[in-house]
Length: 245
Image (cartoon, rainbow, N blue to C red):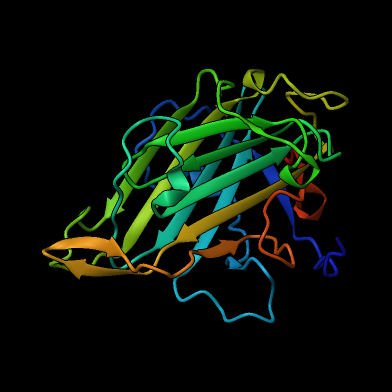
């Protein structure tokens, strides 16, 4: 199958964390994150030719010898979530997603999804779905820490929210299924990385949010893919680990 041309990949310098983040609360306005630049605002997964996402999404990253830290800020006037069991298919709710390919070869890459209830799905793919790959949900990020902050009220259609934010701390030691890449990385190393947000159109029925039947989800990403498929790691963005202390 011929694929559309790949858009230019985004790049991001992941700086050293100023100190270890001991407590996560989902807030991204704390001093820990001050030195980390935001990514560009997310765009439609197919690229700039598609309409601009109606809600802003952006992320930032830091690292140290033990942890990869990720934060995200998701503008959302109606924050909702339903899934509470780990390794549910989280993108059936609105969610935030992280994709990591340390070896930069589209093999043995990692996926993480989280909703506004702080429910997660972490999985490993040996090869992309297009090449016959299947998701290994038995694999998990051992030692994972996450937190969500809702700027508003969760699952309450009677008011207007401002959004939700996420903090994630992933131990490098958990990423043990790839080859040919140092983990933890060293300054100057690069990984293929992407971030995604799934957003569903909803309406209010009997005081609850309901997805509108027949409408596909919106896929908003940091580094556009050129088509609706996140599982093409060679089209992800490039994250370079830097140490500018």
